[in-house]
Length: 108
Image (cartoon, rainbow, N blue to C red; front, side):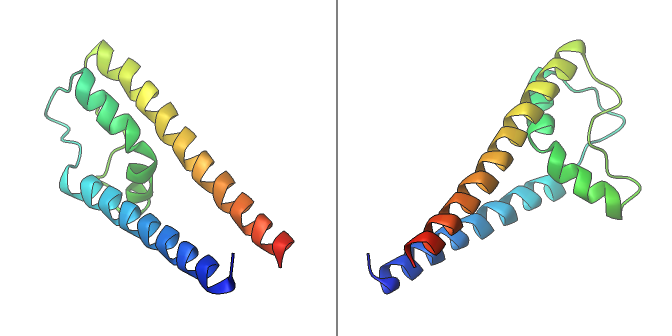
């Protein structure tokens, strides 16, 4: 693979990553957790999936929440399942990125 092809693949990968990050943060901004609303299992999955990103918002805002204070038991279970899925994908993205960088250094 030529250097130009390698650069093209890297550009596509980072562009895709930036788009995903922007979409995730836009979702977290557009759908904040309301403290007066009781949430069920489906929103537990959604809030758990976006909990790492909500936690970044809690650093900058006093009103941002990672988990709804008023929720059902199923919400809590699915929140943890969503959080586990989200953390798995974050770790895999980091591992694969590091692996890709290591392979490029090994080839060059």
